[in-house]
Image (cartoon, rainbow, N blue to C red; front, side, top):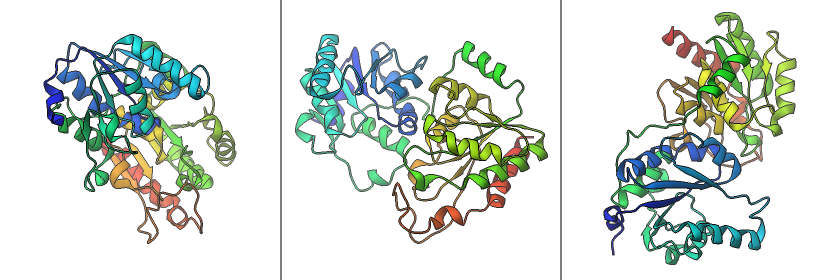
Length: 345
């Protein structure tokens, strides 16, 4: 049995185990499009945590979403067994595991899905009957190519290779009611992975003040509930009275606001990739993470970073002086932002 033979199988009911982080999940969307192209008549069902599941409502490559509620109904061993029972009842004939964890393969195997494909990560080789080995070169790929590469090894190709998310008409109308017009510049100062990925709040404030005045724009602050304090600090330091929506939106509301934005200024974060999926121009500040594998897969992107010996370290918290972020000035980010805004004018 070769991995490429799976693409020749006439699958009708497909389960896809999504990744757990919003940004990573966005970067799987070209692979989802390839699956949809290769299996146009199949039902494609996404298994995802609550936040990621919310993001894939109305998605053209996904027919349905199953929420893996690890904090509630599916918590612990008993909860996982409940999930296995639910999935087994669906009678899927194929599973594609974008998540690299052994748990994804265990669930697919225990649910008796006959064809289980994924990378041979986390010691799960024996749980996959269509295994794809991860090479050293694979680890250097941009994440979008990493997931497309998995499918290509299985004989599955197609789609346009672009990121894709979708908002409903009602969601777009809601975003317009919050911020009418099309001159919205959004600042996303948080990053869920850890504090090392966060640029200095006072510099975000300086960038917002400058761009608001130069382009007569409204400044919008976005972020999650854990970033409320950062947002309040930035808003207090700004002269232009930004619209502070940090901690006040659902995932889908955040998507609609980013889709409407003229520009996003952001750390390396989930919302960065969401904006890329809507082709919103992006200025992305990178410090400890690797821009070659996780930069926004979109046009009209400016990466702002400094060449530092210890970066990318991929650490959640900086053990020294955070120089990879400290050395990035407000002027650096303003220059990148102006280049994008002026080019689009």
